[in-house]
Image (spheres, one colour):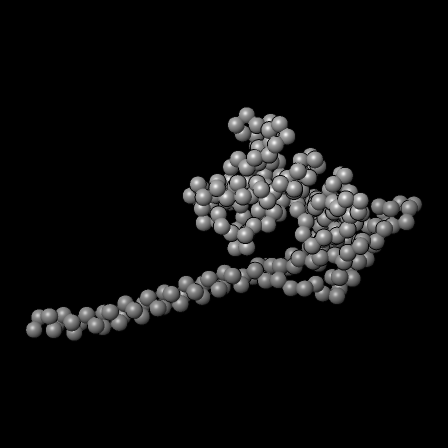
Length: 244
C-alpha cells in the first residue's frame, strides 16, 4: 500500500522533471542559435563600391606622382559585418600584382581600407590600422609570378630563404608534428585532421636554438595548430606544438 502511494506521487514528479529538462534544452538551443546569428554580414552597396573606386583611383594618382598610375589587377574584396545593435564595419582589401620576392618566392601585398559612413564625401575611406600583409607561394622555375588560389601569410621578419625552405618542407614537418600532437593533451584530438598551412611567423628561441619559426596550420574542422620549428645548421625540425 505504501509503495502504491509513493508511485502515485512519483509519476507527476518525473513528468515535471522531464518537462523542465526539455525547457532547459530548448532555451540552451535558442541561446546557441542567437549567439551564432549575432554576427551579421552583407554585401557592399553600390554607393560603397563606387565610393571606394573613386578613393582608390585618387590614391593611385597621388602615389604615382608624375608616372602613370597602375590599376589593380584584382577587384577589391569587401568584408562587411556587425554585431547586433552596432553599426556596420566596412573594410575593403586590395591585393598588389604578384611579383618575385626572391628567386623561388612569389609575393602579393594586401592592403586594407576602412569606411566611415558618417564622414564627409571624399574622406570616408582611410587606410586601416592593420598594416599591409604579405602573402607568398613558391615560384615556378623560369615562370613569372601569377596569382594562385592559396597563399600563405608571411611575417616580414622571416628571411625569404627560410620561407622558401619551410614552404617546401611544411608537409614533412606536419607529419612530425602529428606525433607531437598525439603527446599533447590539448591537441590530441587534432592529430588526424586535414591541415592547410596558413602562416609562417618568427617564434621565440628555445633550447639553445639560434632561430625558431612557427608554422600555423588551419584544419578542416575550423581549428588551428601552431608548430614551432627549430632551425639548426640549415635543417628544420618540428620542435613543439600548441593549439590556441
